Image (cartoon, rainbow, N blue to C red; front, side, top):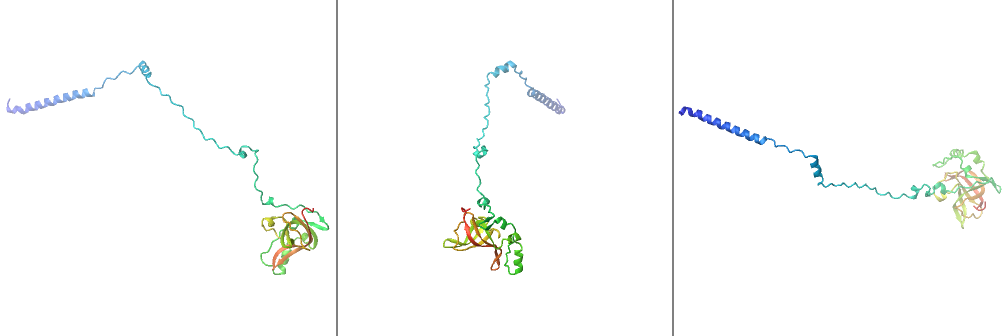
Length: 244
């Protein structure tokens, strides 16, 4: 072989080697990628035979939730007929009502605070310093009340002693109810009478209604130019709660 033919032979050998390598690689690729044969699917008899060896786990039923028992209700809520405790009496219930007065007692005309306090009266806060202002105040008193001025009357109410001598009350207020005596509230100016008793005085009785007899005075009562009342009485005697 000539020197000029050597490169052609080398090319032929190299090409042959490349072709052999490609053939070898292709065969290996086919062997690797060749899918494996699929296993036949199990029959129903085979599945039934296998199921006998499997231990079946029974599920326990869920435990029902238990709610805490409600506390027993008091008798007033469970039984409507149960006795209900009454609330404490209010202020109105604590005030004792005054019984009705007879028309006359031993020649004294029976008068009630329902009549004496049956009108509105505006009390001035400033001193009354002239007759014009006094006349305006007096005009607030109805004529039916003014007609009782200087007449003997009998009035029933509750005592508030103002002056006591030797255990006897010589000056007092007789009031429509016990609000000022027991609870410290201020009554209206036409709901009390300032009374000065004749003689040695009367027994102090503050927890029950009494009847006082005397001469009633109707009109404004001033002290240091301030209005302190519209009723006064010169008391003759007192009738206790058990005398009528």
